[in-house]
Length: 232
Image 1: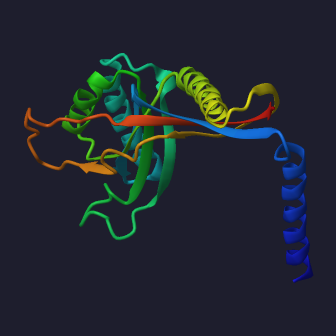
Image 2: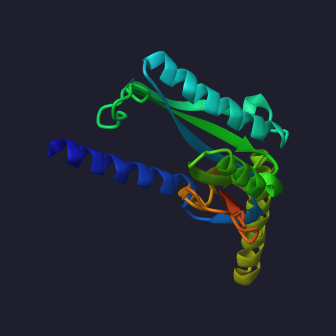
């Protein structure tokens, strides 16, 4: 209880200190904001394969073979190896899933691969190519930006301009003159990436029609700038 009271008193003291330093007489506090909506130009996805065998090694080899076949599909779309990585690996005895009168499924291996797609127009064909190659589970289709720093700088510039515009507008309205800047605080930067378009796409023994279409989602880049002006 004493600790909680101490924390509250400390917060009040900090608030009063800030107020005395920046919110006293002849000062104007402005917060500039910016929200930029940008069309995403990069996607990522994961796909999983199961390998089976009479031994653990055979199960691993079977899974790796399926992964190799899938990556050949990806290479046709010029996806570099650096954009392909193993994100999960599980292997062991296939309890509850063994074949009757056969040891061919005594062991099971699960491998999950993470893929970054830098060309969104190819995304749909990539997904169709993977499913046609036997990949039954494609998950976590997410959208993002290849050059987020560019839009971060643009958002910051707009937030600064917004702060300056607000300061001038308020000063003109109340008949005061803006003097030097006393304090600047950059805060509240965020990039709101969209939720997965389709958390899990599962296609089993189905013919994919040519009407299938995937749509990217925009990314929201936000920035806040706090500025304290001296006024007279």
